[in-house]
Length: 239
Image (tube, rainbow, N blue to C red; front, side, top):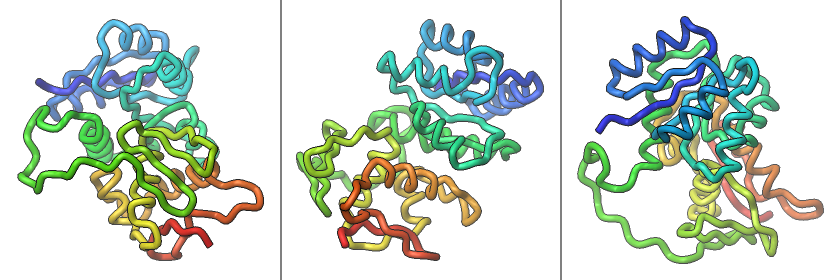
C-alpha cells in the first residue's frame, strides 16, 4: 500500500506542485490549504506522515503540530518553512515536529526526508522489504553513560534523577551518542544513522538538534555532556 501524506500549504502553486511531485513519487496525497483543514483531515483519515507549512493563516503549522501532539498523535511531521533562524527551527522542534525543510527547497530533499521519517516509524517487514541485513539483537533494558540512563524500549531517558522530555529524533540522537560514549562520531555517520541520508556539509539540521538536545541535558554547575569536535562531529563524554 502507498504511504499517505497529509500536505498543508496555503500557497496554491507550491501545494499543487508538491501534490503532483509526491503523487508521481508513489505517495497518496491529501492536500489542504490551511491548518483547520489539516486538523480535520488528520482526525478523519490518519496519514502516515504530515508535511506542514509553518506560516499559514489562522491555525499555522506549529499550532497543528502542538494540537496533534497534545492529543497523543505521534505521526511524524516534516515542516516546510521560510524561516531560517535557529530560534524559529527550535520553535518547530518544540512544537513536536520531527524535521524541517527550508524554502526554497529541492523536491528531492523533501522526498529524502520523508523516506527517512517513514523508515523510522514503519514496523519491520512493512512495505517494501529492505536489503538483507544481519538480524538485530534484542535491546537491553537500560543503557548508561556519563550520568545518563536510557530505556530504549520505553523510550525514556534521565540525567541523574531528572527525566528528560525528548522528541523522537532527540531520543534517537541521544541514544546513538550514549551507545558510543567517548567515541567521536562524524557528521556523515550521525546523518546516516538518524536520518538515513547525508544532507551534505551545508546542512544545519544536525547542529540544530544537537543544540536543542544540549538545552535539555545541561544543568547549572554540571559538566556539559555533548562536545563538538570542530570539523569532525560530536562526542558524548563527562569532563
